[in-house]
Length: 451
Image 1 (tube, rainbow, N blue to C red):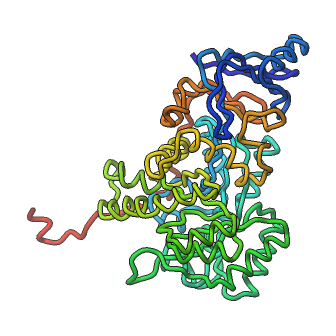
Image 2: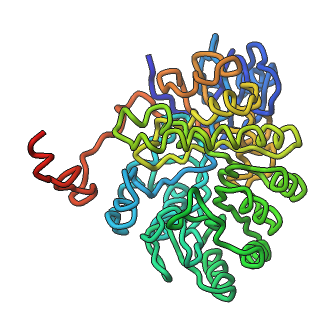
Image 3: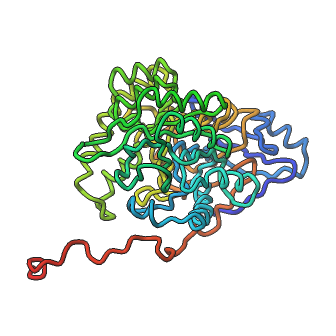
């Protein structure tokens, strides 16, 4: 039976659980973990001694028979998108005030699913930094958040094709026309609070299968160098090998997807020392479950093939020391908030061949990069680390699928305070005009009428 736990003024002792540190090390035997404020202050026998010395102000959680581990860090989450079923909905049915309210409604779902930190690299209406500040101020309940602003696109567009304007802004996109505008927009984003600057390096163009590279190396360097001069990292959407290679050569810090990675791209990534968040979850959901919700079956083989074509080289990247981060791309109808944040771990195990402990590290310790924190200061169970913990019924070090079932979460501790898991799951009705309304699924020809 779940109950709300509020940490006492002196701290919180999580007692007797087996600990997964998040660093790739094996699960330990029964261990105590002491949290005081937003910090893990002691582990092992010293934790109980300090808790006893602190007196009755310590709240205690009995984790006997359970697993204690770091909270999940989702390195690719679109919190302002509002789960659209199409680009039409995403670009033309999300005004600024509505998008802000819906994002504030949805973000607590991440905590309820065990996510204690996430990167929202691009957003509608530049809402990301405002939502981040609202969370930090206690106005909105949510995990730690690192925020980008609009993704930078060239006039050739992104995944939404010709829905993207030739210039200006729409939805999550800011179309930049030349090098000067790229530099100026990057500076403006940092000025207005961006933790990351995102570049949409590939786009969908007519008469071409897959996505093509729509930025030059010089253009990518202009953004990356400008951001780095302002102490801000860059992240790039790359869905072919050339784009991944160019992004790495340009100094991009985190590559999303890295689809169809080849030897040249892999060599560039290894040499540059950048990280990769493959974000297979969206593809896997469409391939495995899309038919259950009416998704187009013609895309199933394409997306399953993208996973298979990318996984082998990503396994080589992992062996070469490239940091792999776990991202779910939650925010679409195929990846609704609170449901699929842990599935990336499952795909990393099945497709790339990582061990469960390695996959857990991708979703915890490695996520420090996404939150712009120093390694070892978050995403780990260690003295001095941030106080973000999960208490789980089951052993994720044997089967990571345990983390994909919210009923296995006994406690979620965020910033040293336990989240109320006993409350009902947030539900709402669609807003007027939020969904695309269609008159028919196909033209009503006479032949159709006679069927």
